[in-house]
Length: 230
Image 1: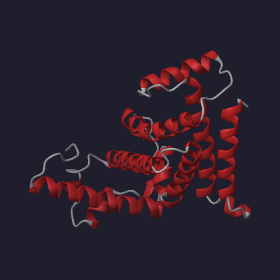
Image 2: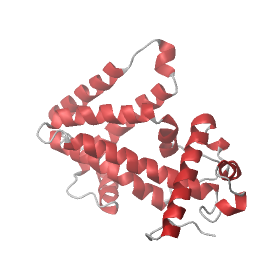
Image 3: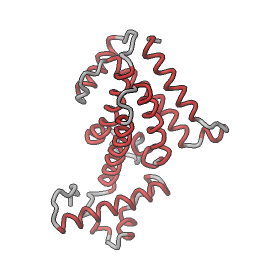
Image 4: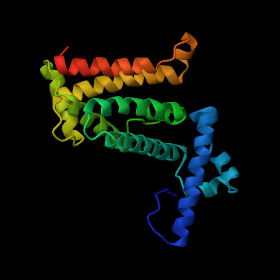
């Protein structure tokens, strides 16, 4: 049976929502302890005092459950970034700096969820499905707005790249976002993702480096490059 999110408010709907949330919580524990390969609907059902087939009334299968966990994680990350941005209404550089800190802090607190967002968790799983791409957009919107508030980037973009980013912005409804802002925001996200990925996998620890200053330096260099076109 397909497992659509409950929309009603009656007792059965509330019970369904409770079971689904408990199943997700159990799934997140499995992910934290053993990665996506450890995810087992039968094990989750056993924890909840159910049979495996009974749990399929709430989730169509393991991929369906994974998809909901990814969408939830994107939503949580976007909410975290939005709250951070709202705390700095008048200082664009401070807002961007704090967004970088918040992005890093969320990933360090939720490494198993962060990995879900940017990896195909299982062989054959479509990590670029329409629903997941759409779920990723609110977090990117926060970043685009923050970059645009600092400065309109200087410098020329090759027309082929500009056309690609223009089409990307239009496809996802990013309003009033120039190609230059889209390019620079993507570059910043790529740099941050690289550093966060290294950090949550322990690479900085093995080097004996405490990396916060790297993130601060990244923002400083990024703001400078926006303003002088370097």
